[in-house]
Image (cartoon, rainbow, N blue to C red):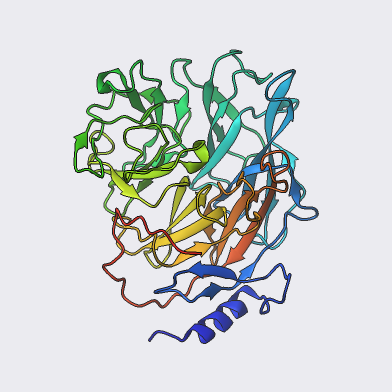
Length: 437
């Protein structure tokens, strides 16, 4: 039986322990754009990072340890990007009550006096049977960061912690490899892998691409680079012409990889303007990387070969991350970083193990903090499902019109109806789903 919208919302408010939202309340509901299977709003508890908001923190990532503790990481910086001394580091917050309250943030360190260096860390938690599991981040470091082990070069690292992120082992990867995928994937046989790309000498020539998996058979203590992935997947443009892969910097540049219930890998690839695979019509927008979009491809052999790339979503939508819910649905969290306001974190559902995604209906607006006319500078976060079935998402958003000087990190606790109608067949890969304001 499918409950009415009012009953669903009131029931979910009771589950979360929050009251119906009043004007300006931090528990104001979450808007659902163009609802079809979901109600027009969802109950929410928009918790700040107590005891104070996480000011000046950018691009958060969230994980839950095997013992139920939530950890959240976001990065900070000091100095000027264009001149003088410059350094980026991260802060971690912890919650032992599933995000209702948070301990004061602590600077992430390898050991005392040594920061866990780099930017845009993305957390992956692996349950190895221990209390804290194994926590990984993938990250890159700016060429002029004062902590860069090889100044004036881009470097990437894979970082490992067995104490829940209190201390870290930072492994700098070879200098010829600098673009790293966002997450670590656990395969059915227990091995772990992440992707790395080197800049091609000629982006229009597929033979110059150098994209490989790094694989570990000892839970991330050691990593081995595999053979070059070839061929890379082709792409059929809006004119119906099949073109070779041309991703600019490489196949794993800010890519996210999800493993489905059959063991297939589904990769979400970021793609920007100026690239032959970017236009979805005759008049694509122009701009910076805030209008980048996402492509999707699938591998049935562990990442050796890939299906033809498919368009998903619209311009300005990237930073994809996928969570499997207890009822089998997949939740994709992504950032609307440009083009369609409000900018910030959003989510949609897949009912067929990630084969198709409908961006045109039931788009969940998790973060609506960026005023109209401002640049985004936000989103980026992900969503975790809690033991009671409710959800928690982290995001950052700008506090100035320029977007990047003083971002702020927050979390929102929310829920989805557990009883939904059968999925429609209207939402397919390739449906751009531009949702009206």
